[in-house]
Length: 155
Image 1 (cartoon, rainbow, N blue to C red):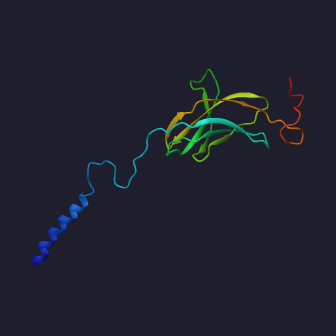
Image 2: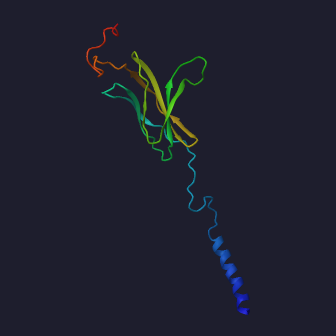
Image 3: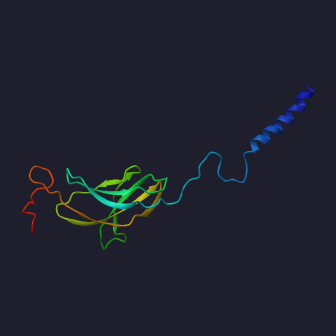
């Protein structure tokens, strides 16, 4: 009984020492990565790809270099005297997608696009603007692009 009374306080002191050994001045708990609250880098190398089979056009870009990207937002320039911000959100993609389908046009149109990376609820900065000339799909009557231009479309 006497040895148990001497051993119990020693075991309690060792247990307290083990529990406190993980404590220190580090504000990050052990095994938990810090939250990255920095805005992700803007995507680069914006361009337009045209599907040779269908004539459909897509906005494409190089992925953000930030590791915490969760998606992208695509914006198109749409001037309006009633708005402060001239770029309008067209849609969004996942982090693994670096292209966005563009709407078809009936006549050649000049558009300006920008893309922004997202990291959870943190918005990145907008990319540089891309000036893109969108073309209507032309076909030679059999549904394939190319061929002789439709004379009704020529001015």
